[in-house]
Image (cartoon, rainbow, N blue to C red):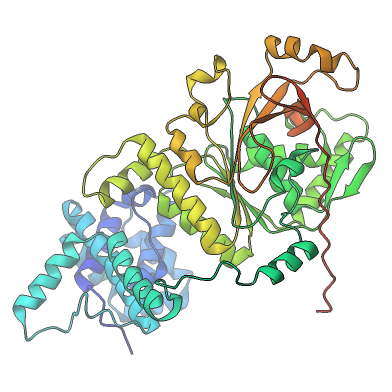
Length: 510
């Protein structure tokens, strides 16, 4: 049975306007269309024809263009003639009013949303009932509500209602206090069998500090521009999701279990991320890959890295202008569709879209940047717990980092409160001449090469190492940062064992 959530006039105005003003289809940041916006095959066919003609370069479209396009598609042409397509196009062209396009476009999209819920079997008449004809006052109230409520708000209202039902009858959100001794013996034995560790991050010593990438945990790694925020996260994403990596001493080595991983880029394009991934896996400098100037076995190693990436559960999403909803939907979709359990979000910052979203949510009140950044960090941590996943993100540093004596959350650009919700916080900085002088005693042993980066660990929940510094040898051209030794804030060397986390996956019979 056809759904009642259809506004014929809205559909006619939308088809008429894009027919009369095809440039509207260029505004992809403002308008997006789906086949299900149009309930009849005739309307789908007309819209699809106009859309395709515009995509082929037509900036002005006439009836003859549409009929010529349909002439190569006999079934659609037959329907066009049966529905008196020429008369319909003349009519919608005449009534099309570009000044009212936004109104009718939004109304059509709202009907699509309500129709989708209705078709799924969810009764939404309590919000909007198009069959209401007896109570005219109620009908007018519903029409006013529909016109003045955004598409996002309608979805939120319905989702909130579903969530309320879930919390009442499923989640038992009220809960009750549990005795402190509940399940402790089982917990102790479980930790003996499977210690509280996650899959390994890339590099020596770092897993001793962090206990690996642990599920339900949110790590933050911050740095000034050009010090390896993105590159270190790309290394970790590949290390977790790819089961082979090139070692300069041993050649290609097995790298544990390949875990489904998502890398969200907010600034770089897909190809920029891909070349860094190739550089990391193959240990071939990215400049060599970008210039195509291979020597020795470098090209063969890059080809092998391509093959590994093609067969790895590693996914990349581009979110150049994002909202909180975009971040959440992207992560949830990849958890659902790709079984992702490890997420790298590069990086926490504001955007025009998120500013608009927060302003709408607060009824026009503009929040400070620090409040918005804090909200992002809260949502990322909530998603860790809600979905049972690991998330790592990053931030830029403020201008104080160059003179700061201690690297901690006070250096985070925009809001030090971001660090309130994280489970591990680290800051990557370039080494200074003063650092090298202070490390002279350690370097004089000849055991370590001169470090060019340092990682300061300022927060580490459930870990014993904090307020410590890892001194690293970094080759950012291959995205490889290798910690060599650890000191306290006074440059005194501290003992640390390099724990090697091994993931053992039993083979399935199915």
